[in-house]
Length: 411
Image (cartoon, rainbow, N blue to C red):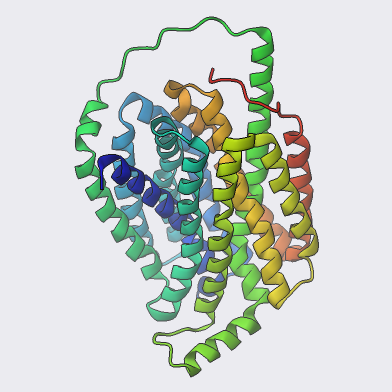
């Protein structure tokens, strides 16, 4: 494997682990801690909120530091720091301790998106497809969080769901540091300040301002949708597919499948299947972005979500599974679109900071979604949440219709 392919593999593994770390607690809270610690699902969610605020708040300083020091160096810090924080969280004995652990995980996890994505966009051609492939790895991290955590809950306990990925991340981080050490040292000497180009025309400035406002609005709204669906799906399936999960568990045991395939494992497996299949939407979206641009692609993806959010209320068992797969196809399909637009209109020198701002907005919205999930679930249940998310997608659809048909060149 040549150095470029190895580097891209490391960046993909980083995206996988980044989303895995941030969603381990979602399955732990839904399937075991609410019973073990005697707290409701809504009460437990409150302890995850500071971690997601850290995930957003520290994105900009991470991008700024990467530009000033070393992107490769920051990636090493991401791998090793996230691993150590996850291992420490596995020893939590109280809700406050686990909340503190999740906060520290959020600080280190904030590094990946403004740094890793800036590297993906700046280093290789076919930006849409590269972002899509990288996005699939991140989504498989989302999916594996549910599957791996559910399996470990049934077989070794919830603490190992933090401990094992943490150890793996440290090993990968050490390997990344060794492989990229020359680049880490080289990046200590920043390049000369770029020469300013001619001033932008008023029309171009107006178009860029409009695109920026649409990017940040749709980033915030789509982040709420993504967080609400990915974080809550294990609990949604726990409520609506528990009978099917018990049946599958009994069927597997009857056929002598080794290991404990209890209900938590099956719920995690159902969520994994939905997340993994839906993540493939990014490949189609990435190809479409390179061919037709973001406006039409974004509108189609938003429309898909609206349809399935509207039909989800009241569904159970197989129909609920199918509808969930439908709206998750849209949720995952949206992910690379704003990153693609930033990559096209921002210069290479400013991309890490631009992504940092984008992810401050994104992950602050992710954190804000958690109290929404808790409040709506405690008072009305998930059916009302799905209707709220359908309305949010209407906002995205309206905003995206204002995008220009063709993006201007980087400025």
